[in-house]
Length: 155
Ligand code: SF4
Ligand code: SF4
Image 1 (tube, rainbow, N blue to C red):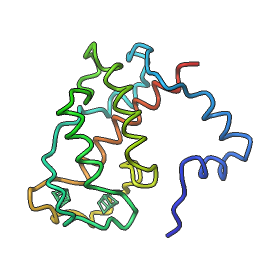
Image 2: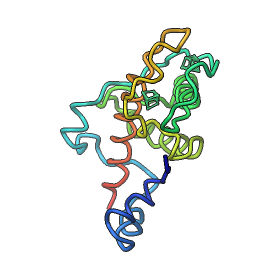
Image 3: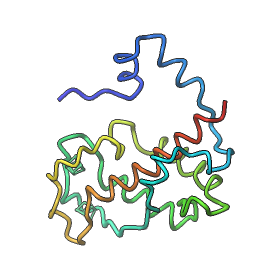
Image 4: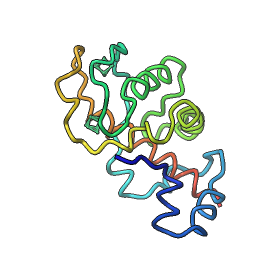
C-alpha cells in the first residue's frame, strides 16, 4: 500500500495550488477560545487519558503504518509532563493543546499518526495490558483534529 502525507493528499485532491494555501493559513499557536471548535468535532471529543503502554510492540506492525506504541507513549509522557489537554472547558486547554500538538507533530511522522487508523481491528486483542488500541487511536485523533482546527482558525 502506498503511503502519502496529508500535504501530498491535499495536492492530489485539490490541485497543486491548494495545499500551500491551506498550510500557510495555519499558525503555530492556538489562542482562540475553544468555543469556536466546530460542533461536530466537539461532540466527538472525549478527553484522552494515560493508557499504560509498556512498548512491548506486540501490536505491531500496523498494516496501515501507524506507530501504535509511539502514539500511546507520547500521550503518557504528555500526561506526566502536564501538557495533555483535558476537557474543552478547561482554562488550560489551549495552552496545553499548543504544546501537545507541536510536540506530537515533531515526534511522530504524519504517516504514523493516529488519524491513519481505519479501525481494521488487526491489533485488537494483541495488547498484554488490555489497551483497546482502535479506541485509543480514535480518541487521540479527536483531540488532534480539534487542535488542528483551532490552529487553522488563527487567520
Ligand atoms: S485498528 Fe488501527 S491501529 Fe489497529 S491495526 Fe488497524 S489501522 Fe492499525
Ligand atoms: S501491545 Fe499494548 S503495551 Fe504493547 S506496544 Fe502495543 S499497545 Fe503498547
